[in-house]
Length: 295
Length: 239
Image (cartoon, rainbow over all chains, first blue to last red; front, top):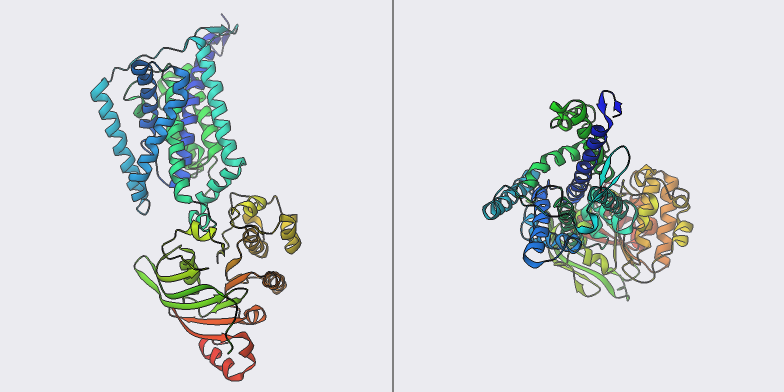
């Protein structure tokens, strides 16, 4: 077997792949968080719960209604997005005038409620979700074995991230969003229905989290705690990329997934803390994050 | 003074406004007729900018604001804008995350008859050269032109202009003056907040004097040749 820096290439590429997969989820989740924070100024602690909801809705659609993965890919984000609409309209809208901390506490509370309710009903052991038949099996690339489903997740998440970036940075609708992030009152004074845009942006962020949840269902166990397990890392990713920066969220999502994967190969003891070490260093050198604009 | 025969487009009566706890307007009354250019004069903090913000619905207000017959006081800002009111804020409000073209195209059209990009570039040639610069990299004068230009595109035909000459070089002020006179010729109705009285006198039909959140006097521009009127203005404004 080939070796590189004293590590077998098989193990190295295996961890690089896992790093990419984790990075794909970090990127998709931090993207939604960045968009929500940019416009609403709310640190959406319910993001992990919305991701978990996406996975659970997928599991329920299959097990209760016989609706398959491909339909869930569309349905789960729509359902969770609608839940996001309700949350914004009936809860978040009431606290915009207050300090950021209230948004954080409220969404954290919602996350705990959701997690608790699902834990009560389904326990914490997690439930399996089968890989859709079209994506079973894998490719032998010579230097490693690439499961088809994982390849799909990487490709799909890159498409999702690129589309979101394009929508926000290159379209008319995106220019409303960017402008409203800077000065919502003035954008409204130009005739744009900013309150509606805020509702839809929150719903979009929640739907993005749910989409990540659907894709995660066949890889990780569908479990009530899957959201709280990942969300802290995702917050670190957002902070490293720069709060509110779209490209920053995407690049640091994939980058940190990769760094985490490589750390597992070369110094496994640090693999669960390396992201936070990077965060501390970035905050010391560039407090606004790698791609953030200092305000 | 003979009554203006043109219909009243904006009729503000007893307008009160607040920033949180602080009560800043104490009953503003003013009228603007179709095609008129009316200024609000007064000291810093008199309530001129607050009057425009209150008309736009950007601060908490009460009283009556009738615009082309519709009551605006309970309307959200985006619906006020869509009724044809174009707002150029004091701080200009150019977006840093948008380039000049994106800034120009940002406000959605609200009525037919807005200026085309070509017409805007003829009016403000600097904007054409800087089309791809970041909005806030423009000079103060260029930012002011951009702030006006983006409203002209939308078809809004009633303009609220706040301190459009503030901090600008005389040559730029002259250019803005040319643009404002052209807009008047084209039939725009304009309510202008202005500190620069000599400039206001070159473009306006009438002046309202605002003090402590109230309108304390109204002076037609034609009466400025009367020394008694000038000495009255002098006593209000220290000019």
